[in-house]
Length: 106
Image 1 (spheres, rainbow, N blue to C red):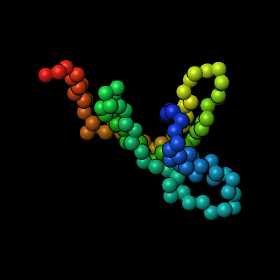
Image 2: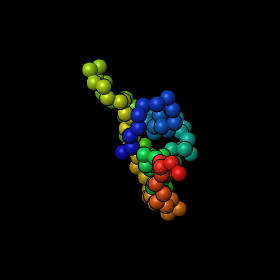
Image 3: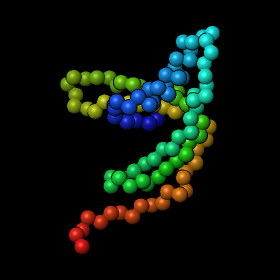
Image 4: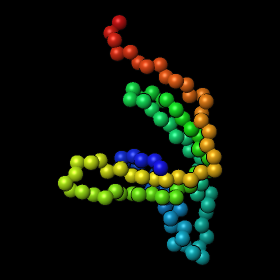
């Protein structure tokens, strides 16, 4: 499962709608060309440096929570949740351990 804060970027929603609107279009022709996607999952440290990357193949959305439970009394950040199924993954070996930045003045 992947999580991220709610944003205006509709990319995941558009992809999810290809999956979940499929059942609503019975009898209609549906293009499955973009149904599965190869993606790259990148992890960054607090300094903004790329730490790890994974190539994930032929993914499709199996669950998507577009809006979490809202509580007017809470001060939490709204988080989207997406669950992806896939047909394989591999670590990107070209990503090496980053050199920690130095904040000392020369």
